[in-house]
Length: 89
Length: 354
Ligand SMILES: [Fe+2]
Ligand SMILES: [Fe+2]
Image 1 (cartoon, helix red, strand yellow):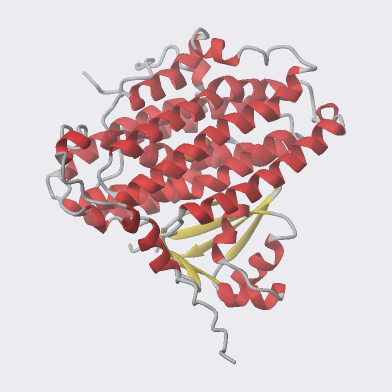
Image 2: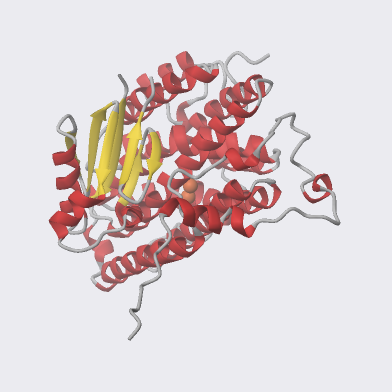
């Protein structure tokens, strides 16, 4: 199984996002680096709008992720509710 | 009294359709071949452009909104850094060599990428990739401008920042990045996409921005950190465009495979030679280091690129040629300036090319 990842800037906007990702993906590993975090996960990683909204207490548009996104890997699929990263192989 | 019913907002997928395909039309008084003269000559066969979709489903209206937000954040930090005399707080003066290398070797390529994507965005017959290329073209000019703008603060206090564009055409080691992009923009639109969108953005760009920019942050250079991460936030979209275009081309016609494979081999090798500049910065120019070039290579090329090529194997794609040579280079840390004496010292040929 290959690893997918998402990397985000470390700041106040991303803290609840990172928390939500880690909670929704128990198999994910947090990798902290200067000014950024990289979250690695085997095979698949999902970012859920509802989990982020629960933490920040307001509506969240998943496209807001682009503001603090540094990088990612894997095949992407985005809907109104979820952003999924996955490798087929 | 009538109830006011709020008009239902379109979902992401419908909005994407409306704002890409919905804005396109089929011309009736000019032939498609005349409007898109570069679409066929490279031998790539496309049967249905509508099959291409941006998986982020970003539309121009949302694009402007989020890009404006990125710029606001960026300029707040750049201003604070300049106002605070932040340049006095970098770890060591020699760190600035890394920034000079970036400004002369990388920022002009951002501008070339802007030009390239403007061209390709005009030439692809499909509305989906055209919109994505338009966004990337705007991103890339933003990268060039914000880099020049951020680094102009250093130009007030230190030598060597004043004439980067001129340097690109005259300093010998900069012939590597320069020829890379000059060749890419003079290729056809599909080769350009494989060269820049895929081989450079997807396979190699993480190596440029992620460890280097994190290293800039670690060395107190908030200017570079903020333009770097701001640019990199667009890269996720660029990488996705590159990957989706490759998958799309391969799915459209089996005849496309050998052409695409050849381009991947060629451009991964050439991109690797450009990135030796980053190897140089990371291993020799960061007073406080976050990781070596070799470690960055293992994470972002071997692990991540490995996963990518495993995924693409279903289309018949194999990993790029000359990987053994690339692995040798990174294991022994051979940056651009140290290549003399190797069998292949030219940036534009593979080690085994005849
Ligand atoms: Fe860029
Ligand atoms: Fe880019």
